[in-house]
Amino acid sequence: MVKRKPIYKLGRKLGAFVHEKCQTQKFALSEARKNKNFRRRVALSDYGKQLLEKQKVRFAFGITEKQLRRYVHESMKSEDTNTELYRKLQMRLDSVVHLLGLAPTQPAARQLVSHGHITVNGRKVTIPSYACKKGDIVAVREGSKQKAVFALRAEEIASFTPESWLSFDAKKLSGKIEKLPDYDPTSTPFDLKAVFEFYTK
Image (cartoon, rainbow, N blue to C red; front, side, top):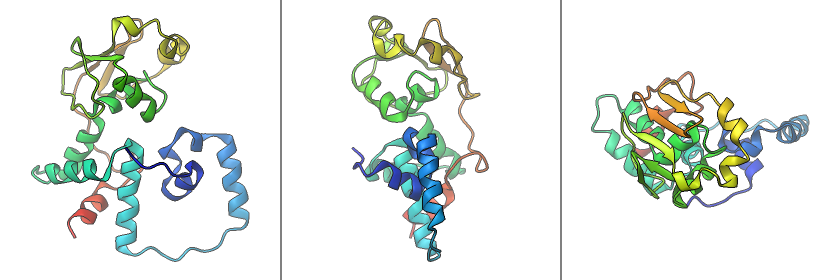
């Protein structure tokens, strides 16, 4: 598991996207107070920038150093390394569950999978890192649909808009991977090129 660190400290260093608690008014006010006493930081070296981007990816997806290193090395076999790495991260089962709106956060999605609430093509899967494929049906297990973790969020789940490469049926609590996600560096909060540079030094 990823080692826990103070949430606000992580948010300031890596970006508010790393945790839902950093996307609140309370965090914004905290940042505003910090900025009043702003001190100019020493410019990061190339290595420092690459390390920062690597850490952003790790904490955004809640993965270990070993897992990320493996994804990077496997992606190097592809012609489009950035897209391949992006897909490996987004196509993890816990990521898909989160992106379908079945869980409010990545950690919550990981817990849903680990506790046996999620199925892939009708089969229960309890491995958060399970690699989904195009055409897979990811759904809430029939015996889990009435549990509070879903029932209390029914309206939120129904109004959630998933990524364009996913389709979702809120009544059935079931989604489908319609196509593979594409990496767009302008719409993601981290630089995957820098991540590869970190691991290839």
